[in-house]
Structure formats: C-alpha cells, structure tokens
Image 1 (cartoon, one colour):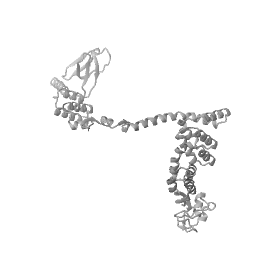
Image 2: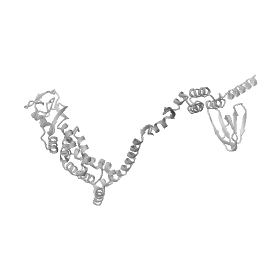
Image 3: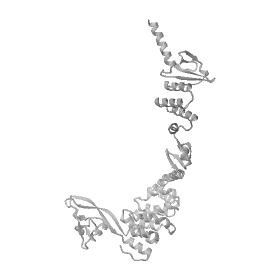
Image 4: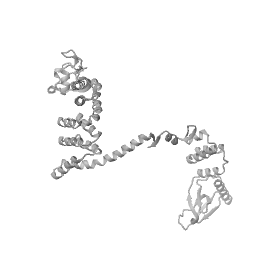
Length: 413
C-alpha cells in the first residue's frame, strides 16, 4: 500500500514538472549551445561536484560543471512563458493573447517583447503602439522620444525641455561650479583680514586688492556685504568697483539701496561709472516699486543723477507710493479715524507720534496716515499695548526732484 502511494506521488510530481507548474524552472546553458531546463537539486557548489538537475520530464541527470556556460534560476511563470512562446503560432491574435497573459502574470519585459513581435506582423496595430509609447507624427509611427527630438526637445532629469533651456542649465551648472571655487579662498582671506596677525592682515588685504574675478562675487557678497565691520563692507565696495561685468553693478546697487550706513551706500553709488549706467537704470527703475520707502527714494536720487528719460514713466508712478508701517497703540484704545489740522485723514492725536520712526511721525504730523491709530509716546508707553499695521500714502520729494532734473519741467504730486 505504501509502495503504491509512493509511486503515485512520483508520478504526480513528474506531471507537475512537465506542465511547468513547479515552484522553479532552472536553466543550465551548455557550452555546445544546448540547454537543460528543470529543477536543480543538491546544495553543493564545489567546482568538482557535477550539477544535478531534474528535468521537466522527471528524469534526473548530472552535468559536469566544466561543460556549462551558465546556470540561471528562473521562476515557474517565466519558464511557462518561454514554453508558451516557443509553441506559439505567429499571428496578431496569438501574440496579443500571450501579451495579455504576461500582463496578468506581471511579466512586463515579456509583454513588451510579444507586442514588438506583433508589430512586426501588423505595424499599424494601434493598441500595441499605444502601450509601447508610439505616437502618430507626420503620418508615421514614432516613439515619443523621436517625436520630441524632432520638435527640438531633449530629456533632462525625466523632463522634456528645449535645447536652449538645456544649454542654459549646463551653463548655470558650470557657472555655479566656477563660483564655488572662491568660497574657501574668500573665507581664508577674510579671516586673515580681521585677525590679529599683522602679516596675515596685509596678505588678506593684498589678495582682495588684486581680486577682479566676477565668479568670486557670490562668495564676496555672502561673507562681506553685510559684515558688521564697516571697513570690511567698504573694502567689498572697492573690490566690486574694479570688477568687470553686470554682476558687479548689481552687487553695488544692492549696497547702495539697502545698506544702513551712509558712508557705505554713498561709496557704492559713487563706484558705479557712467559706462555702467545702461546696466544700472533698469534695476533702479524696478527699485521704485520696492516695499521700502527708503529704497524708493534712493533709487530716485540715482535716476535723477543719471538723467535717463526712460525712467520718467516709472518716476511719475512713484511720486506717491503706499507703504506699510507697524505702529504701537494702547490695547484698550481702538483704532480710530481722525483728521489733522489740514483736514486730511490721519491719527486721532498725531502730536503724540514720537514713539515711531521719524518718517512715520512726520507723516502723522502732516495728517497723511489713513485709518488713524493712536500712537503711544515713547516715554509714556503703557504696559498693555498692541501693534497694528497702517498703510501710508507717502509723497516722495526725491522722486519729484528726479523728474524735474530729467525733464527740466516743474511737476506737482
């Protein structure tokens, strides 16, 4: 009885292997070009130990390892695909059916293989073309890559861009690499400059005085533009003044418009030569729309000195600009609307506006603060206060002066 059961199990195993339904179907490729498929047995991997494989028919054979080219372990479903593909009648229907079977069994590469074989029979099979990523272009089937290439696009980091954009990206990358070289150098020179060693200080100063490299500007800006030492900021201005190119002008304008020290921003403005005005004017015109009234006024002064008529429309728009200010008021006192002696809307009691910036205080005294808020005197600030934002329509005399200098005409606000 046991012997009969044992024979039945062997037969069942042979049938399963023959039908390709075992767990694995390994492949041994022979050097003479043949191959043996089945299931490898045994765990020994020594070179002198032959390979033992149970074939799909159930036979067990041994193969000398010196006769093998390679051994590959494959899943049962891949082995079944190979079996099906070898027995396949070449037609559109059979290749499509096998491709669908591959899709069901998650065999992506094998599915694409069958679709390509299908297209060899029917090049206009639309569904296969769609799955493989082909599109109709100029009356012919091409891959999406070919179509985009013909349209002048290239693929960069999984995104289609124009060749001009790629050139700009590559240029920017190259530019960035050239800029990074200067960061350690500037850091060392600056360390020498502000250090205690007199020799090193002279070496650092000499290095900066000899520097005229536009690629060094980002490093200089990061480490020197807003340095707490005014002498360092002045040296930064002097380095920029002898550095050629548009980037140096941009950096000088940045310090002219935004530095809080008059000596520094005055020197920055003086360092922009007449030959650089063509570069500076568009930047100054843009600055007329800045949120800071200080920046607007400084830009207007520079434009008036340059005298470029292209700035006239922007200057007219900037005669009166609106800015926001943060003002402290008593927590128990609501924001109220009042009028000044001139009849304009403003703070309820603008005479008390001594606890804010001079510009805001002056505007309050003139009654030019809309939606007035009671401003707390600096020396009488109560414990319970809150900060509110007020919008101020500000008349800019520097803009008016610039307009008159450029046009030789008198303008009102």
